[in-house]
Amino acid sequence: KDSLFLFHSMPISNVNYTLFKESQLIILDQLKTISTGLQDELYKFVQTGGKLILFPGEEIDFNSWNQFLTRLELPNYQSLQNSTLKMGKINLESVYFKGTIENKNQSLEMPTITKYFKVSNSSHTSEPIIQLENNSPLLTYFPIQKGGVFLSTVGLSDPFGNAHKNALLFVAMHNIAIMSQIQNNIYHVIGKNNEIVFSLASFEERDKCSFTISETCFPHFITGFKEVIGS
Image 1: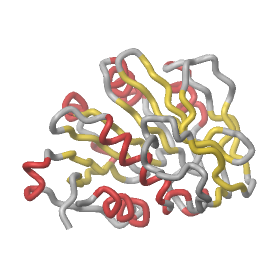
Image 2: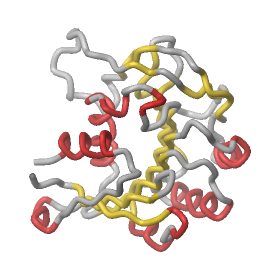
Image 3: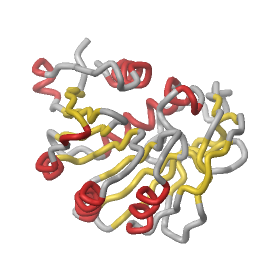
């Protein structure tokens, strides 16, 4: 199958910051710590128009994560809640979901969340994209200067439940990627042990695309994502 997205990988220990200037979207996936150097580069990336998606892991260094979130004037991660909930309200008026579900009254199969991070309140302008059934945020968008940040309270792994295997999250991720593009874009996933780089190719260049993934980077989510966005 052809795909609009081209996947590459590189180790998190050797992130190529020069690629950030060519990128439209970066995904941080289950990083335990965000180094000051990475914080600086991501801050500049967002300020100058880039979009950033933050997915936490089970074990995070609250100090480094919240230092970065505070710098962006975003809610801080407070504590990991071990509660089983369903995904709740989907913002069907959001540009990331609008038009994707034909019948707004249809019953959707909601994924189960088994863990999520509680976050602090914030006065920052925001757009809720997905909420939990207890009205806690799951995925929220915060515009920042010329760019913006998508903050998730769940990670892309089984301990958090099965949201990362559900089509609703695939749709949101797909549309975030599409909305972030300008001609040919490159965006990155920085994983727990790896950074996966996704290159968004133009329709004319799809035959030049390829798909690569390391064994440690959650094939359930990535494979499903590829199937949803592929042609």
